[in-house]
Length: 104
Image 1: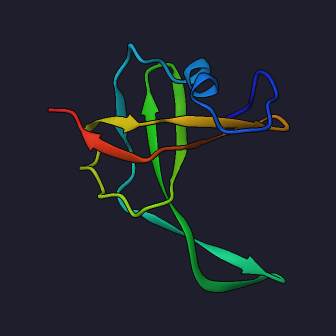
Image 2: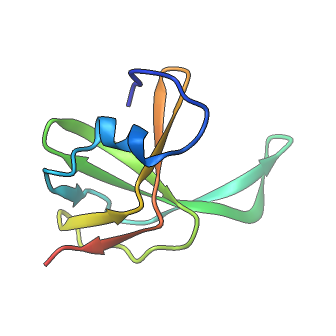
């Protein structure tokens, strides 16, 4: 996702500029992606986080990073992202969250 402004830290206000609280968010991931630390161009066994993809009406699918391993919500299920934050780096927006729970 491309950014509209530039800030230097993750925060909830930045996430709210891109993702609406008024519209549902849907999981579009069929598997959890594990992210690893890389040193000198080589992958280590150190896990740095996990990534899932979500979408919302009017927004292209976007990746969200989790520090702790989340449970994988069913494909196309509506979810609530807990403490969703975003950071703008150059012209890109990166999201992170503390968890994702299925909305019933």
